[in-house]
Length: 126
Image (spheres, rainbow, N blue to C red):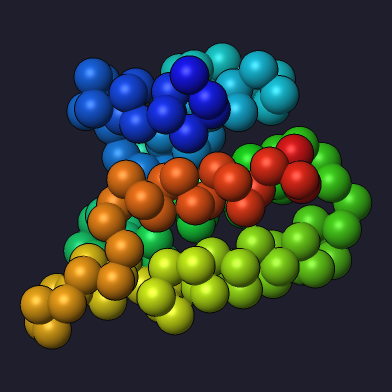
């Protein structure tokens, strides 16, 4: 089972949000406990709880790269690269509700696919 599949399995078994699932996918690389990562990502699910904010999977990918200590992350290059690739992969959006099709009825990318994409995109930076 690859990292993304494992993250989805954990997400559905534990009932955690997208940000938490992405963070837990990198638990071994980040040097943080499961509890710490769950707490860190707890407020970022569902587009910061109201679907009006940034997709939690994208937030988790940037957090994971930042926690890994990549020096470029602190200069925002890595964050911008992750965001751009995520946006290009997930229908041209980064806002949770727009990705989910809230108000339009057109889902651009399912939550599970956002998680898979975020993990794949973050991989080179972690």
